[in-house]
Length: 221
Ligand SMILES: Cc1cc2nc3c(=O)[nH]c(=O)nc-3n(C[C@H](O)[C@H](O)[C@H](O)COP(=O)(O)O)c2cc1C
Image 1 (cartoon, rainbow, N blue to C red):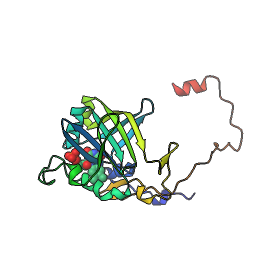
Image 2: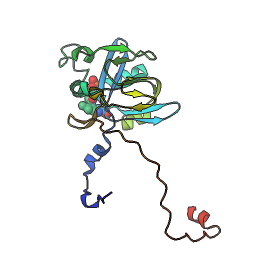
Image 3: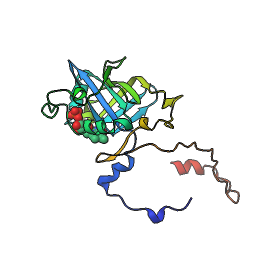
Image 4: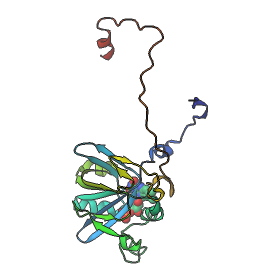
């Protein structure tokens, strides 16, 4: 492995998020009292194993956030390459903008095929590669301060052509590759799959000196 130090360049802090931004872009959906909506979100992540939890950043300006706060439920779904244009569109117009949507909701305006989430009734989109239905874990302080929403995943499903036995495998299904937003409507797709080999720590060339009694404890203090 050659050294990367010659290529290391500072990244402006206002671009630093882009270094971590290529997890899968999701669609966040919610519905309450006859209203439903969805939006694109790149800032979503897993938070815990059991019970499974997720986190997603929802700006105060988003209509999805209003519905989610009122209903107490939401869904994250993982859209695919074949949906790239609609994902970008869902992230560039608000469901609150009736004029832009010609008086229809975003599902109708963009020709999506919704179905009800079996656990929460949240509106899900056909054609995605995965769906996670969540119960909002209300944290008013962090919602208000950081626009961060936490949810417990109460049901999950995935397209078995690209996710089975706990793993993604996109080979042979290019249109089902997940979308990873960089910025400005530019996305990356997941590429080659690799398995890591077990690696042991390199032993020292000469034996290490025996530790002095109590030394480690003092070092930790
Ligand atoms: C690829 C992409 C990723 C986005 N990620 C986020 C995000 O993580 N959080 C957020 O609040 N807005 C994000 N946005 C912007 C919202 O999707 C956008 O404000 C949307 O219009 C909100 O829709 P709504 O008002 O109908 O809920 C993203 C937009 C795009 C195109």
